[in-house]
Amino acid sequence: MRRWLMRMLIACLCMAAAVAPAQACSEAEQAAVTANPDNLDARDALARTCARAGRHDEALAHYDFLLARDAGNVDWLLGKSQALIALQRPREALPVLERARSVAPKYEDVWRLNATAFEMLEDYEQGDALLVEAERAFPQSTWPATRRRALTEQRLLERGTRVSLAASYEDLSGGRDPWRAMSLNLDRPLDDRRRILGGVHVEERFDTRDEQLAAGFVQRLTDDWSFSAAADVAPDAEVLPEWSLAAEAGRALPGNRSFSLRARHASYATVDVDSLAATIEQYAGLFRVAYALTGAQPSGLGTSWGHALRVAHDYGTASHITLALGYGEEAETVAPGVVLVTRNKSIGLHGVHWRSASWGFAWEAGWYKQGDLYNRVRIRLGLEHRF
Image (cartoon, rainbow, N blue to C red; front, side, top):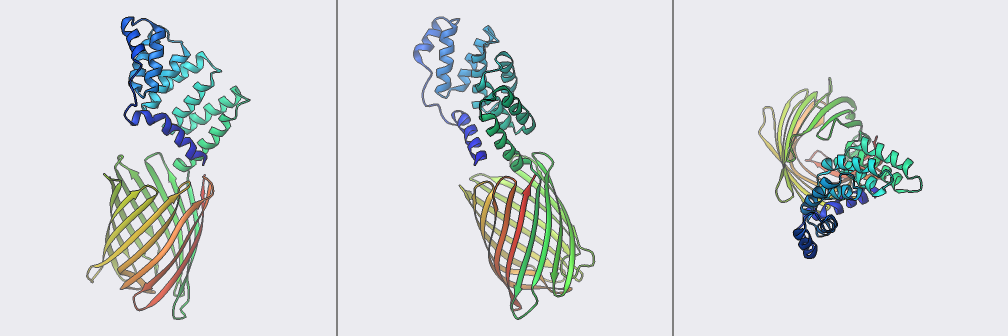
């Protein structure tokens, strides 16, 4: 909730730059400045009315004029910084705010705006250091501690390393032995565009046990394009692939949509399976709807086609609940060393619920029909942690 309020504060500061101005600058004060450009009081009043009207570029020009006459006027330094923040130019505001703090070290509004600039830039280290100073400078104020807690949550959400521990249980029809699995995964950001992934997975089916190691890399190439690659290995596996490679490219599209293509090669003990999946996703507020078409070709067999539909609802702090429906043909291990293409149906619910920025839990419940072989009921529970 604190992170949401902080983002709302930043959005409000920038809103005037994102919409058309509601009114013009004051005509009377504009006339006074036109008549006497060196009338600093009139220009100061004009800069303020331009800012209130949402004309931050004009306000910025007036504050530049005023600061050329008096570079140490803290109110003008603050006004210029506010205009730059509203124009979503926080990096340019930083030296102006630093100058303002040196001139008036007890001016709390300057410190608050300085913290906002660091938050907009996602510069968590300098933002935290500034707020520590603010706690010492203003011991009677509560806002520095509140902003520090919110900044810590934002840092965890945006840059925190995520660890996931999960266990699943699947009950099979026909009196067959259940399937069990456990996994431990790591998702570590390198910076705001790159992440590395790693994991360990243990699967028990048909009285056999496979152990798998996985690694991956995610790169946001531009604001619209992203790319990821992943690999896993399970030596002497009888159920899981002995090894697999996957690559995916995604692009944001106009109209709150995205599209991705994912190619995968999986090598089982007795067969290789190549697959290509195309996914299109539509975003609508707190909801997402995605459709995926997957074509898979086991070696020596024709191409099989599978369809998947997901409807997700996002809520809270990165939490979600997703309904997943599946239909079509799929290559699946149905016995140790035996991979068959069967016509499947599935329905499931899964989600992640974050109790805080640090701790959450994952859950899943689903029903799967594996052709005419058997039905499965799956339950999965997991613990999520960011640090």
